[in-house]
Each structure stands twice: as structure tokens, then as C-alpha cells.
Length: 432
Image 1: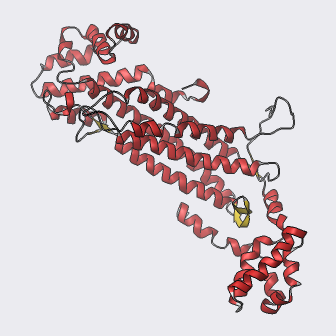
Image 2: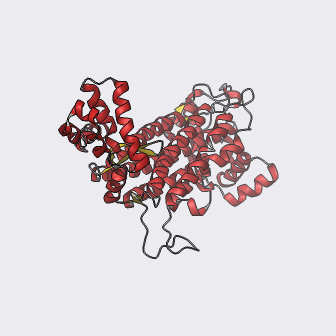
Image 3: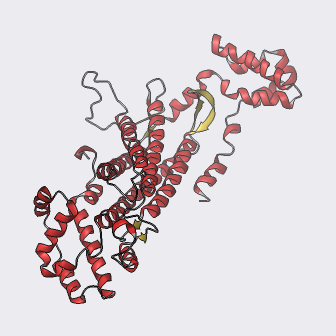
């Protein structure tokens, strides 16, 4: 994590203070459950709940000697609690604390990311309705295809981000799992009721078979979901970057007063936000692969996953949190140029209506092969000689003979391509 791309709301989840606070709560809840079972005195739990605390500097000092973070933490807590601290961590193993805590942190992070996605969805929806009927060029392979509206582009982004929200909700549910099962997960030294109690209090569900660690397929699903969201974010960013190119200039990132685009060229207005989002997406996607590799551990457990998760947990969630907030602001402030969209649409002098003419010819009784030949012959004159497509068709006796001049002119109507925009919007946004 670097400060430039970090929001304090997400960073706070991964700070030592929050982590150790969760550790202490796990240990205290386990003591409460143990007391209910009669394993430890109820009076001891009252002391642990009242006096339980930790000192981060002291933990670091102890860990430097013992080389074990959980032992260092427990020693620090014991210095606050006193003799009753002997009842803490009864029948538990370090992974019970570490894994359950990580689940809590990932749930907390997911809640922040879900709020971020809500901001993105709201921004996209508002701009989609604003530009529902703003006609622009649809492109395939980067080449002019047929007319669409800019609102339809935005509606597509909304639908994808809404799917991403559902994916993240599912990943949150998958990762909301705790384990208090002891060494190798057999509950030999701790009752399963303790796990159930702790998980219920933390808003988690017990892991069915923990083998001492929570299986990492859960974590892999979580980080792969973040990677998918990042890729969707990049798809939006790349589209905006393409549309901002000088030769296109259909949309543009907001350029604030006093902003500078280049240290060398004062005229520049570069798409820096969307380029940054492309870079952020590359970074976030990189965490999916180690998360997948973490699934494979030796026997009941090893710690080959541990160092990886210390990196990817904070870094992936912090980076995506920042990026989604940036994306929401980008969409809200995006400058749209409808006149440039029409200019670009008309650049190829009517070629965007070629499929309509092709279909008209087939409906008029001309074979598809001959229809394609006639349309393509006239279309190539536009490409190669700069001719006007409609005028070329009107000058072609075969086409006129099949369709008539009035039908040809009628087929050059933008509304033909946009007649189902409302239907698509209802599919995406429902009836409003």
C-alpha cells in the first residue's frame, strides 16, 4: 500500500490496531464460550473482558525475541489481564485466531468495496439516462459498424458492474467463515460449541472442515472476484481512452482549471485518470494468481500462504477501493461531446446503413449473395474514392430497380437503429 492510492477507510481495516482488536475479541469470545461449558471459571472471563488489552510496541518487542506473532500477542495481553490470562487460548491454535481474523477483515473490506460499487453504479445510471438518446458510432474491431447511443454504452457498463456487485456479495458470503477447531482441526482440545459461539458473535459461519486452516479456495474466489471487477473497470477506462483520442474526441476526462497536461507541451489534455485505472487493474489482477496457488497446502496445513496473504489482503482491497472511487468520480464528471459523435458517425458518408440496404434487397427478392455484392460494390467506392453511399446506391440501376429511390432514401434513417433503446434500458434498469 502506498499513500497516493490509499483511502483511510480501507487502510484502517489492515492496520495493526484493528487486527489485534479482532484477535482479542476472538480470544475473549472463545473464553466466554468455554465458561458456558464449564471449562474455565466465569469470574475469569469477567476479568479478561474488563482488563483485556494489548500494546503494539510491546508485541513487536516480544515477537523480535520469540519469532511468533500470536505468542507475542498473547504475552502482551497477559501483561494486562494478570493470572486469569492462563485461561486464554485454551485448546486453540494460532490459525484459529489468524484465519478467523482474516475472514473478518475481508468481510469488512468487502463491505467497503460494495459501497464503492454502489457509487459507481449510481454515477453510471445517472449518465446513462442523460445520454439515452445521444447517438454515437458503434464500432467493431475499432472500425465503424452501426449507430448506437452513448447511453447504451453506459447501460452495458452498468449491467456488468451490477453483476460484479452480485459476485462480490457471493464472495463475501463465501469468505465469512471462521474456524476455532484446534490443532489439525479435530476439536480434540476444544468443543465445537466454542467455534459456533465465536462465529455467531462475529457474523461468520463455522468452516465445516478446517484442517487447522480455513481452505484457501474461499480466499481464491474472493481475490478472483476482485480481479474480475478490476477488469470490468479497465474495460470502461479503455473505452473512454479510445473515445478521448484527438481524432475521435467524443468524450473527455474533466480537465480542471489550473490543471497541466504535460511538462513539455502546454496544449496537452491527457486521459490520466483512465490510464491510471488501467495500471491499477493490472496490479489488482496480479493478486489472483498467488491466491489460486495458496489453495495448495501440505497435508493439514503449512504457512506458505501466510506471507502472500499479508501482502495481497491489504494491497488488493486498498487498490480496488481507491480505483472504484476514482471511477465513480470519472463517470460523474465525464465531458461528453454529442456533436463530435454525430460528426464521426457521418464521417463515412452513410456506410453505417449498409446492412439495412442488404436486408432490404433480400426482402425484395434478391439473393443474399447478389445483395451483398451490390452493397459492397457501392460501399467500396466510399472507402476508396470518398463517394457518398446513398448517392452511389441511387445511381446503381440494379439497386434502384430492386428497391426504388424512395425505399433507398427511407433506409437512411437513424431511428431505425435506435427503436429498441427503451427495451434495453428496461432490461438493465427495470421500469422507471
